[in-house]
Image (cartoon, rainbow over all chains, first blue to last red; front, top):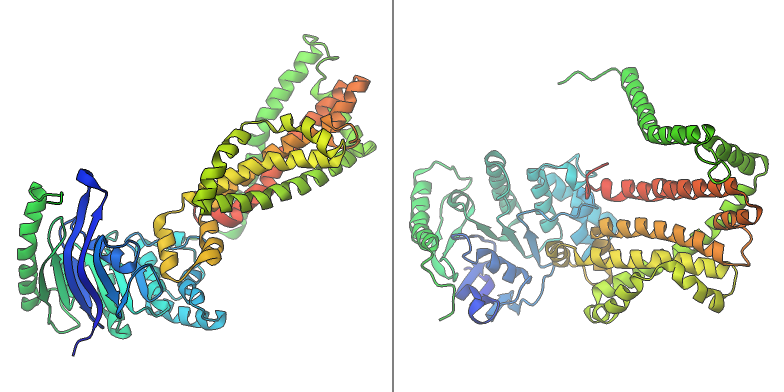
Length: 264
Length: 274
């Protein structure tokens, strides 16, 4: 039995008004299952990050409703964790201070918060860097802090917005492997945005392919491969072909600019 | 592993670098001083209107070490500066924060703020002389006003320029209201706030000197020292005053603001280290 943790009902998002408006999302219906690793993928500008922002409560849908555990999302809150592409750590706080932030704000006493934060710092392999300031860390290490920070206060859902987009190929691969392990360890529902098919196939239970603007759900591909996964398995490559097949039409369309950005 | 240099060599090098830094800092002063001294000695300029650096330094020695009155003047000035500046800092941060957080307030007050910001502080002093008397309060009010606008303005700018994603991250983790403000918005805007504090102390210091000159009941103070020297035609004492004002302004920045910067925005990597 799968239970839906997030339900997206007929959601549209339009930026601006009149004939200069841009429709980022149009009539999106989606369900996310409790505990699953869902990946949103699509050509750039397809509204996949917008989708994540709506779930985070950073922005509100123009039409439709988004429910988290049956309650409509109206603003950001600690039942969600957000991992940003450009980390958005607090530079004035140490690694420990950053990871403790959410715990303290959700009312955990200082000592307990520190203990929990240290566990998560350990989980992302940053032990020994608790007292370092973010600007002294490499990109990969910063994003480890970002992940530990978003998980430490035990949110229901982890939202990740192209979290490894700014990392070099080697670091990126390592982070993907560790993300898979962390997901297994914590059992969180993850909604992960990427434009890398390899990344999507490696991490996802389900890959949700989105259309070029205005963003719609083009297709959903189940990735029922055993974990831990290998990047080179035959099945793995087949699934990658399926996703690429769906994506290529869209990328071609968005490159040719044939899709209208206007509301009909 | 690269070879680590032996410790004595390292400390020695650091020491040498410090000496070199002091030398390069002093060099332009020494050069200008030498030319100035020569000009007077050669008789190109009358020493009655422009005393030679050697004369000024001797007078400075007399006033500070032999007579000690310089410290009395400086002490009173610092007393006024600390009170006025502390008030400017407290209210500037508070008022700036309020305006930054409340759009309606900001739109209401910003025209007044822009108008007042262009009025030189010294122009207020005659008003204060009438409303607050001829003593300390007038000078302190001038010091306050000098710092207040710079601090307020830069606090508003700083908070306005905090990245939306920083606020989003904080709100996602449950930060709200006053907590969000104190633990995120204020530190995130610290680069601009420190600029305000730096400009503010400069303006406060200048306003102080002007205020002291204009307030008749004020006896002591570095500004008053210059003003009083006029009655004795003591140009040398005036130059000592100018020197002390410049030096103190410089030291306030170096010892106060720079240290604050080092402890905050430089430590946090929010600006490149200087």
